[in-house]
Length: 207
Image (cartoon, rainbow, N blue to C red; front, top):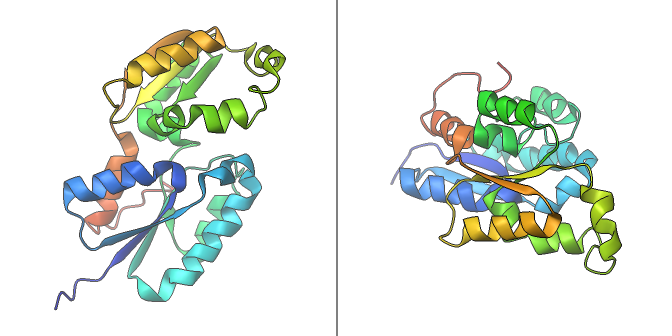
C-alpha cells in the first residue's frame, strides 16, 4: 500500500480545468483537488469564509493543504484566514496576475490601464458569466455602461483550443475593443503547484 501522505489543493472553480491538467501532466498522484464555486467571485466577501470551511473540513485527512486562489478581491481577508489556518496561497492580486506573472502583468497594465482581461475559463463562459450575468443580453444599452472605459481586451491564453483566438477577437469586436493575445501558459499557477507537489518548504505566499 502506498504510504505517501496525500496533499490537497483547494482551488477556485475557475481554475479547475487548469489544475486538473497540471496534475495529470505532472503525475501528481498524491494530490487531490477540491473546487469552490467560481461564482464566489461575484461575492468576494464570501471567499475567505468558504476557504476556511474547506480547510477545516479536510485538515485531518491531509498532510498539507494549498489554496489555489490569489487575493481575488477579498481585500486581505483571505490572507488573514490563511495565516490563522496555517495554509499558503498563490502570490498575486488575481488570476490575471499569476497567469501572466507579476512583472509581465505590470507591463500590460502600465501599457494600457483600460484593459479588460480574459482567461481560457472566462472565454469559455463569457456569455454566461458576463453577457447574461450583467443583463446585457436583455438590455444591450448596458454594454457601453460596463465597457465604455475600456480600450482593449487582453486574452491571456493558458492552453487555448484551436478556435480560442478567433473567439477572443470576436468578443473584443462585440465590445468595441482592440484585441491583444498573450500566450501565458500556466504561469505562477504551475510553478506554485510544482513547489507544493515537491513538498518544498518555501513560502509561496506570503513572501
